[in-house]
Length: 290
Image 1 (cartoon, rainbow, N blue to C red):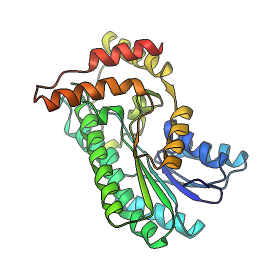
Image 2: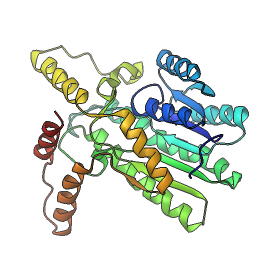
Image 3: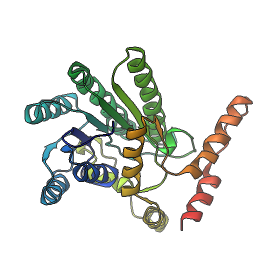
């Protein structure tokens, strides 16, 4: 896809971070943009800001883990604009620690948003997009953690790896059917987003018992905030996404330095060697971004 003017995009997780940056790119390119997010106040603000820039924008509060919400999102998008050409299954959260210590709530929340959110987007939108018989593109947001696996945040790593596999399957299935719909999977490295503060949007029924703010937790949050502040800007990631759409590029890695860690994992796999924690390489990478 080379010409974006007049096209219609649907973006989940659109009120902040990468989703908001993608929405800004859409407006700049003349794309009619449907913003979906679970955080109503931030969604309203994003919509207002983009309309002030001259964008044609529709805001729809959406919990992507709920099929009915995604169906309502599609109904409203098609009622307003008639077609959808760009689908960004972008909503995501971070939760949980190692596999046995992550709570049942952590697992349910992460799988609901990070994986079911993408599945719902595909199941609800793809049949309608296929029926259009027009040039379209789907971008599923995974993570650099979808290509490597460290020892922390098992729910996050598991769901992000699943999104990569699902996206590969979607790409191959559409290609086999000779569909004009193309697919990309976005695997960003550390990016300046609010994902470290996902708890603000955790549903009440999936909340964990409140933990005391110990000095260790406080220091950890401060370190994470510092890392995010030094990470790749969301705007740069959005530019890479649109560059990939133009090139019909499937894998979108926004920081080529992460390829070193991907290569390390693949080489160990080919040699049938046990997994190696990539954390030291990640820390080295983050240090080089300071």
